[in-house]
Length: 163
Image (cartoon, rainbow, N blue to C red):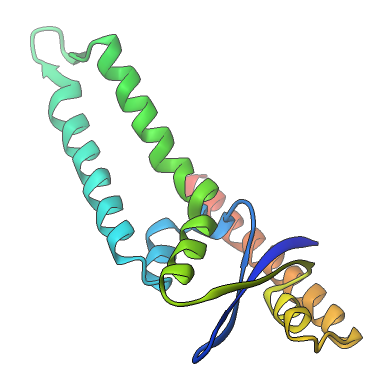
């Protein structure tokens, strides 16, 4: 079971966001940001990614025709800074994706209704509404199993692409 924060809006109803890491945001960062309409975060994400790519492409290595190879022109401190930026760029969505969604809901007029342990978002909303029934438990288990199947297929495709 996961912990969910359930928010309520007077017009739009209930939304549940999982506490903790967001694996979807980790594996599909820019797609996840676009689907969740995090346009500002997406713009920063693209700008940082392109800036890092251009910096690394233009300044990190140059081809030395006399030595017939590539030569690194970065200092150790520059390499460390690039490493730290890359780690934040890579693991930021994993660690902070759901927190950003929660802040977006709070900024959009949603109020925190409850925090609950549930198998799925639907089950968390049903618990918050007081409509929790046993058939939702099996539905939640089925949804989580489908998520693992989709994840396994995606990982298989990614691994197969590199073989």
